Amino acid sequence: MLRVKELMKKICIFVYIPLLIACSSKQTGFDVQIDTDSISASQQKQWNEVANIDPLTYPLSEAFFAQWQQLSDKYAASHPSPNISHVYQRVFMHFCDSNSSYSYYVLPPCVLVRKYSSEFDTKYYSSHTWASEDYFQDAPEFSYIPHLHTNKSVLYLFEGVEKVLGEYLGGVKDKSGKDINQEHVDDLHQYIDLHYGHWGGYWHIETMPIISHMYFFNNGIYVSLRDSWCTGKEIFMPYQSDAFIEIGSWME
Image 1: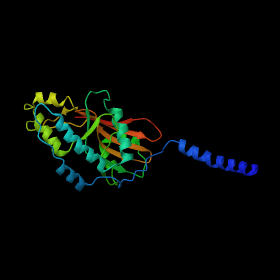
Image 2: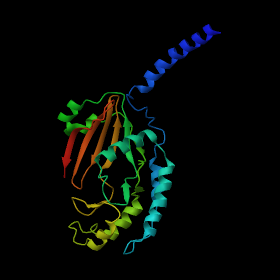
Image 3: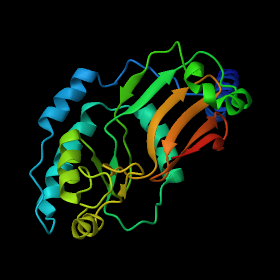
Image 4: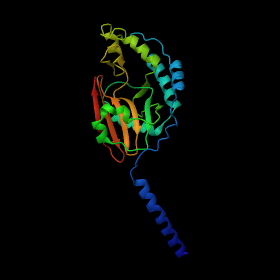
């Protein structure tokens, strides 16, 4: 009986040690199933058609945000994507102003994602950013709904909502911004962060950073984002690292 127990103990140790090593090692990448939980163009169109919201009145009421929140919650639940959202949250929380007093984070409805079977060359890309479109080819691009796990409520900027907000704020018909209703801007600014567009005639209503692209490579993730009303950057996040390597930037 004693020999059996000793044998079983050795077997357990033999199995446990490799398992412990495997579990404690850092993840080398994300096994992203690109065609899973993505949202198609037709599905996006359907959501934009149903995601209508009542016109705004001054001053803003909680009913407006309650309606927007209800639409956003349904939209977020329609296409869960844990791996994509994990990366999105990591980037967003790194660059956002987490100490802001705004009640809501406003996200774009989609982030564009690609997956490559090659490695990303940061040195080459940094010296050839002018040819970035040529660098990112030969891989299909899919749309994903970004998700955040945060103590603030998350809203999505549907086309209908953006139109209503633009009419409320003004400045979308006259690119000089002369018709901006500053009283309405101050009113909305109590709830969300917003910036008038550099070229005029539009607003940045999504919370900065506005993450537009996330491309997965064998050695890390390329991310393109806007971090202010007139600037943006491209970063690379190597696997097995907490680094955010800036590989490009731009200014309007």
